[in-house]
Image (cartoon, rainbow, N blue to C red):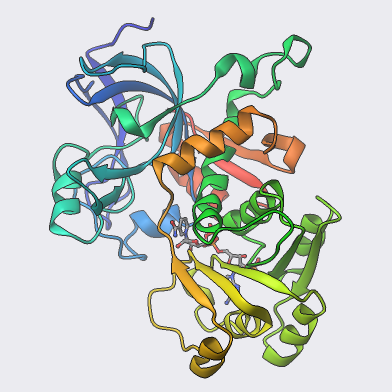
Length: 374
Ligand SMILES: NC(=O)c1ccc[n+]([C@@H]2O[C@H](COP(=O)([O-])OP(=O)(O)OC[C@H]3O[C@@H](n4cnc5c(N)ncnc54)[C@H](OP(=O)(O)O)[C@@H]3O)[C@@H](O)[C@H]2O)c1
C-alpha cells in the first residue's frame, strides 16, 4: 500500500485568461463517502484547450484543478467503503451526481459545474478539484473497480494482456455506450454514427459493433478516416457527409432498414446536412440518440418525424450501471481496447506539459487517445 505524502503536484486553473499553473497543494484527506486515489493516467479530450481558455464557455469555479476520466489506484478509503480497498485499480468516472439528487445535480469533474444550484454546490465545494493532480479525493461510487489480474495479466495466464494505457480507452467508449444503450441498440440492428471521424464518433463505431450491431454506417466528411474505420470490420460501411442532403439520404437508404441514428456532433457541425439525411433514412419507429455538443437549436422535419413514429433521446455521459456493464464487457473480452481495436495512446504528457497535451489531443489521429500522467 502506498502511503500518502503531505503535499502533491496539481495543475490549477486560476482564470480562463491565464495559462494553467503547476502548484503544490496539500493532499486531500479521506472521509465518509470518498476514496483517495493515486492518478495513473487522466484522459484529455480533443477540445480541452477550448474548455480551459473559455472558448467553450463551460461554467466552472475558479481556482480549480481541471481533469477528466482517469485510471487510478486507491490509496485510502473512507470508513463507509465496503468493497473498495487500498491498492485496487479503478476507472475514475468523472460524472459526479449528488447522492440526494442523482438526476438533478450532475457535474463533470474537472470540466463543467452543471446547470443547477445543486450541481454548482457540488463543484464549488466538496468535488471542486479533479484528476490533473497526483492524488484525488473521489466519490466511492465513481471509483469503478477494474479486475487487474484479468485485464493486465499475461494472456498465457488467462489475462487479456493489456497495459494500463490501454484501459483509458474505456473513457472514450463509455460515452457512446451511454447513448446507444439508452436508445436500446439491439444485436443485428443497423446504426448510423455521425460524425464518425472524431474521437467519440470512432469510439461509437467500435461500441456499436461490440453491442452486436449488424451494420454500422460511419458518416463523416473525411474519406481517409472513414476508410480507416471500415478496415476495423466488414460490418462497417461508410457514407460521406457531402453537404448534399439528397445524395446522403440516398446513399444511406441502400442500407435500409436503419434502426438507430447516433449523433455526436461538435458545436462546429451545427449546420451539417447529416442531421436531416440520417433522420430521413431511418425506418418507421427508428430511434435517435443525441450526444453532441450543439449549443443552439436545430430544425426537425416535424411531419415526417410524426408519420414515421420516430423517437429521440438525449444522453449526457452514462450511468454508473452502464460503467459497470461496460467494464464487464471489457473484462469478458467482448469489447476490445488498445491496438486490438485500432486505438493507440497518441501521447503521454506530464502535468507541466499540459499545453502540448491539449494541442496533441486537438490534432490527434483517429483512434489516438492523449493522456496526462501526473
Ligand atoms: N453527451 C455527452 O456526454 C458528451 C460526452 C463527450 C463529448 N460530447 C460532445 O461530443 C462532441 C464530439 O467530440 P469529439 O472529441 O469526438 O470530436 P470533436 O473534436 O469535438 O469534433 C470532431 C468531429 O466533428 C466533425 N466535424 C467538425 N466540424 C464539422 C462540420 N462542420 N460538419 C460535420 N462534421 C464536423 C469532425 O469531422 P472531420 O473529421 O471531417 O473534421 C470530427 O468527426 C464534442 O464536441 C462534445 O461536446 C458529448
